[in-house]
Image (cartoon, rainbow, N blue to C red; front, side, top):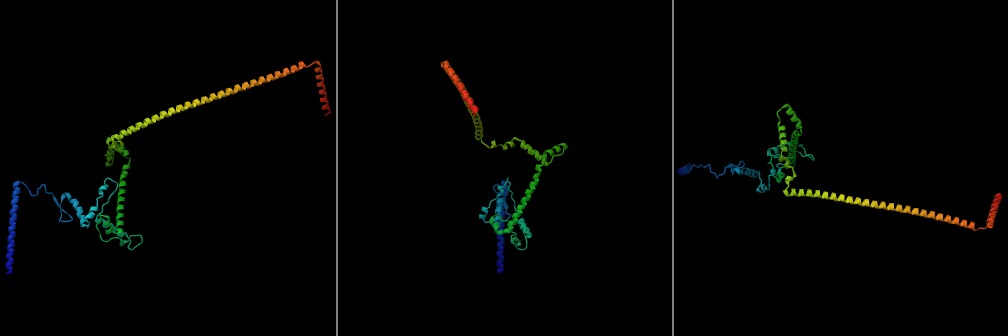
Length: 345
């Protein structure tokens, strides 16, 4: 009895399913007839955006325009990063565009390979001051996207190995770039002359050098490095006025200095002329005084002589003949006494 009930119910279900399928087919046929009548297509909806399937979660269908952003967010979510941690993360690659700062990206495979190589090169036994194999991680982990995850997932030895690897790769790229730039210091003039003489086809480096020289000869290239192009019209006029005012001030100062020098020279010459006149006047006054004193002395001497001669004449004239005789006898007597004294001595 139960088997009969089961079969009837199953038959009923199949009949209902068949009715639903027929109804859906009829509806789809009506919709398709409507599209055909209007000339439309269900796939050509202008307002409908094309959708893509997320590679990290098959249940996510995302528009094409936002697929890259969704993939980055979904990848971090699969790795266990919360929305708050994702909000704190920022892409710093745009900050290093057109700069000398170099960046380096690493995936999970390369990170595991670097750690395995460092662990293989480490000693087996524990040694002081050196990382041994027990300090390195054995299981591969995802590349950490922030400092907190790097400290938690990687050991100190792992971080040191990754740091040494990145520094070594960047230094190697730097040396390669420096060796590549050595071609820029080659004497290109001699090469060009030889090429012209030999009529050989020019190399790529020579063509680049010619293009560089051609760009440097252009007016636009030369004007880029002029400081006036970076200033406004007011600043340029202000500098021109400042230059002219400085030049006028310098000329005015030089003229005044020359006038002051001329006045000073005239004053010095006047002083020297006055001093010379004073000296000549003093010399003349001294010479005249000396002449006057000499003439006075001479006159006084002559007067005294005349006076003495007059006195002698008066004395001679005033004596009588007896006095003269008496005077002569006194003189003779005096001479005799003097002779006698000299003889006795």
